[in-house]
Structures are given as C-alpha cells and as structure tokens.
Image (cartoon, rainbow, N blue to C red; front, side, top):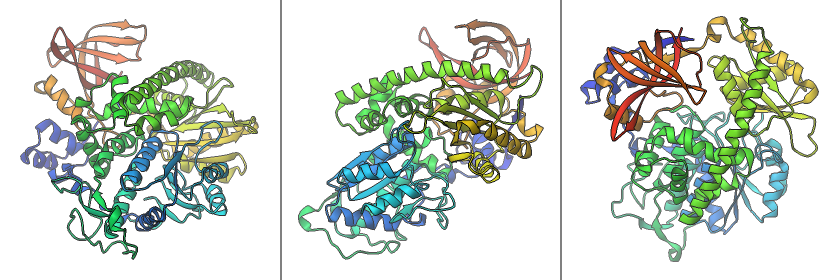
Length: 609
C-alpha cells in the first residue's frame, strides 16, 4: 500500500479560513476542491433548478393529466436502498400532491431479475394500472417498455443509470445521463431524480390552480425554483414549463404541500447508493440530515435508527451508509424489498418498529451468509496465484454454494483486499435459467467496469447474456459454460487498461493531524459534516510509535500508540498481523466513552510497511 497525502491549495484553504470556516475544516474542504464558502451553502434555494433536466416538464404534464383524469398510477422500483427510497418518495410525494390511486411493485432479485421486464409490465397491467412509473431503473428496459406500451400503459421512466445504445420507447424519460440532458449533476441518485419529478409536478399543479395557498405560515420555499423568476408559494407562472389549459376545480383545491418532508429519504438513498457527492447531492443530503436531527422524519425511518442502535439527534452520513442502508438492502438481497419499502411508507409507529426489527434480523442473516462466502472466496483467491506473486489483473470467482443476493458485497470485500476489479458469481435461482450465472462486480480507480463489460461483449459476442451498471459497480449474466471465456476476456481488458502503478493500492489521506485537533468535540464536528463517495471522509496519516498491541475477538488489532508525544488508543478492524514498533498509519478519528469521559481514538485504515 502507498499512502498519499492530498494536495491542499493554500489560497483556497486561506480564503475559507478567512470566511470563518474552522482551520481544520478549511484545510479538508480545500483538499476536496472547495474554492469558496458559497460552495458550502446547503440551503434549498441553492439546489440546481429542475429546468435543466430533460423530460421533466413533460413528466409533470403526464402525471398532472393522469391525476386529473383519475388514472391509476403504479411505481416499479428497484430492490436496493436507492430503489426503495425512490419508491417511498414517489408514493408519498404523489399522494401528498393529490393522486388518489398510487400502487407500487418491486421485482424479486431472484425470480424477476433487474428492472422493468415484460412479465413485470404484465403484472402492473393486471393490477389495473393506467400509468407505469419506473424509479431507479428503466433506462435499459427496452423490451419491458415495449410490452407495457402494447398493453396500453403510459410509461414514465425515471432513472439515473447510464443508457445503452437504444433508449426505451417510453412516453417520457427523465434521466440526467440520457443524451441531450443538460442537468449539471450527472451523479444524482434515482431517489433524487424522483424528488425533482415531484418538484416539477407540484409546479405544474400550481400552474393549473390546484392549490389555494401555502401549507405553512412561513411561506418559505422548500425546493429550488422551477422557473426563471423568484420562487413564491403560489400563483406563480413559470415560463420554463408549458402551461396547460385544464384548471383544477375550486372544490378540490387545498393548501400546497411541502415536499421537504421527503428529504430524509432522499438523503438516505443518495448516500446508500454510493453516488458521487457533488455539490447538489451534498445539499440534498445535508437538508435530509437537518430534518432527521430535528426529529422531522417518517416514523419507519426513526424505527430503523432505533433498530440499528443509532441516535437520530446525531445522525450522520455514516449511519446512512453503514447502518440503515445495509438493513434495507438486506431485504432485497435475501427476502422481499417490500418489507423495506413498507417500513419507509408506514405512518404507524408500532408497524414501523415491527418492520425495522424484521429488517434488522434479515441483515444479521445477511452478515452470517456474507461471512461464510467471504471465507470461501478468499480460499478460492489463494488458488489463483502463488504466494509472493501478484494477483491477476482482474478476479472472477464462482462457487455453487454462493448466494446471489450477497455476491456484490463479497466482490467488494475481495476488491478491497486485492485492489483488483472483481466479479463474484452465483448460480441463478430463476426458473428456466438453471445454467446461468449471475455476477456482481466492483472496480478500482481507473477501470470503468461497465465499459469493460461492453468491450468484452463486443469481442466475444454471446458470452454476456445481460449486463449493465456504472464505472465502479456493475452486474452481468453469463452461461455457466462460458465463465472461463468471460474470465479470460476480462483479465485481458484489465491487462490492457491497468498498469503496475494503478494496481498498487493507494490510500489518499489528509496528512498529519496537529495535536491541538485531537479533541472529542472536533471529532463530533467532523462527523456531522457531509462525507461520502467523491467527497471522502477525513483520513489522516503520519508515523507513530506502537506502544502495545493485542488481538481482540481474534480478528481485530487493538493498539496503544504514541502520537505527537501523547498516548492515544487505536484499533484496526480486520487486521491480525502485528505492526512494527514505528510505522506510518492512515487513520480516521473517533471518540469513545469510558466512565463518563470521552476520549479520541484512531480507527486505522492502513499502513505503509
């Protein structure tokens, strides 16, 4: 491992400090590309306006027309946390805006597979729906949309995944990554896309006279303006969207609903989907966290915090990514994501507690399965290369006992250990596909996984039955007898694209930690900031003295360190090998409490040995 210190532009750090930012935060922000205090403004008014998102105006008109005609709406979700939160945001938001009939359906990972497939379209029609709305999927569902069209369904696709060579023939597509879309935040999650659709729909309904005034006495906007003029609570005409002639009858007019109540769900889905936290995503997350800390969150989400042993008053992005997100994802991996969605939809505290406990139990089962699979995977890895040799440029693993719901997590663990693009496969459990293997991949910096799959598909037609995904995560299906061909093809691409320097694991850090910043109150300050993918949480690095070290639980290294002349506790989770007396460590800051006293400790991320 190579520990690398991020560059800190001195002018940017100085400017932030002069603007009143704490010196440590100024240094951290500058190292992450923040040039001015205005970039840290997380107010709702600073969100990107919806006007730049292609298809948004048409989606608002489609939904408003459907609601006016009393049509039945059905949301088709994905079975991960982004899909679950996007579904909950869609259902809650549409009901808030006056939709009288909103249903949802989430495919089963094993029996249905991903996205809007023809059978899913048929099930939606059988439920009596008139309008089908996809969330966090659909951009690749060419056949599914065609089936839905043939059945007489109107299809609105809302997605954020990269499109393939052919777009589905939906009535409207809203996806910032579709050709011709000028929306600046290409990293917005599926739940964020749906939130923007609701903002546009509210604007369209307002234009039609659906509301008789603001829902709160403050009259403050709870989202960015959808027009070129200033944002107001009611009676505004937005030149950016076409005005429809169908007014809403005065008898059904009601106060204009606030959509900021959905932001806790938007924040959770955004962080859990590990999308890049650009400025717009950071604002969405910050706004969601503020509401959660203030107690303004759905009761099922509050129940999840309790089940995970986390406190809403101190909610952090860490809670989203490592406590709540995995519990919701576990339902889609091992059971039925309907459990997760219902937990996010319920307004009954008792039912929320019950569903959250179920999700917690499923997640414990997921951890047990993952642990066994991870051990099996590491044993297989050891057979791929001799001790002392470098691993292959890419890793492909399969065992008949692997569970397809957990292959992505195991791929991530192997990738982290070996710093190689990794695919883990399991036998498909779907009827009629007994000889297919479903794989989930995770990648490293410099290796775009979906592009690599696309190249494999072009070089070896027919090997990949299906594939899709992002730069850092992707999925694919191969015939069992073609796995060796796929493995060698992927390794060949990796050997062409990756060099020895790229394959050396690098850990980017923020350099030494000044001793005056080794304080529990500053740990709390850091934890409350918005960190995540593309805006990495602070990791410091410097040479320390190892005073003592011992194993705890047979798999973690507990440390007594000397940092800048002062003793500090430390722990390295998952490390069993001893460290030399002096070593350069990379570490995060944490605080634990003992006998009422809070003390700083170092959570070790890596070492340069």
